[in-house]
Image 1 (cartoon, rainbow, N blue to C red):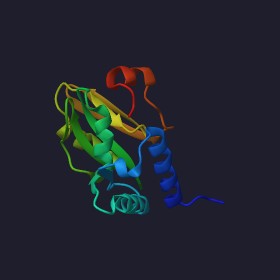
Image 2: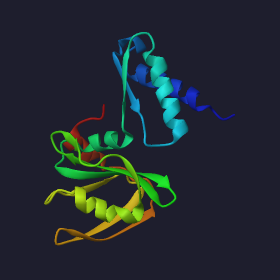
Image 3: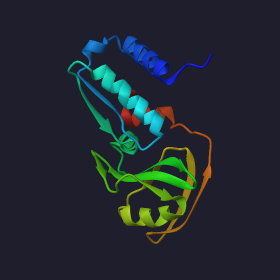
Image 4: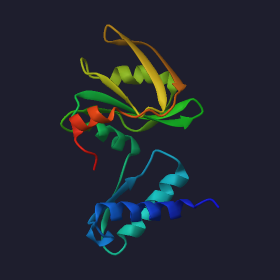
Length: 173
């Protein structure tokens, strides 16, 4: 039989608590994604966190795209965080990553064809551009500080080089 999403969430919480050698009562604060993303998935995640926080624990929501950008904290770059919104659209936001993560553009759904102009308006001169996640193969050709062309096609999920990631960010939490 197929396991229901809420059952998976509880099983994942139990697994992670056990591996971290802590109890649910040891957690003081909960956070969860508030989108963008699947309406049902976001709703289930928020309900699960509210249930876990019930009884006086604090909780807050964070943008899915902002959470992606925090993977690049410590790197000096501009992060274009994207998610498939279907119908030739992406959810996107742009962040300046360095010692902290600073939002440059609000979360929005845009046509893929609109990305070059949005990037040109949000990108900081001289900083490399990182595109997250790797669900899309987005290639941006830059010339004289401007964007010449962009194309997007579905690509397999890729992962960062583990050794390079650990050298820069340390062991995953």
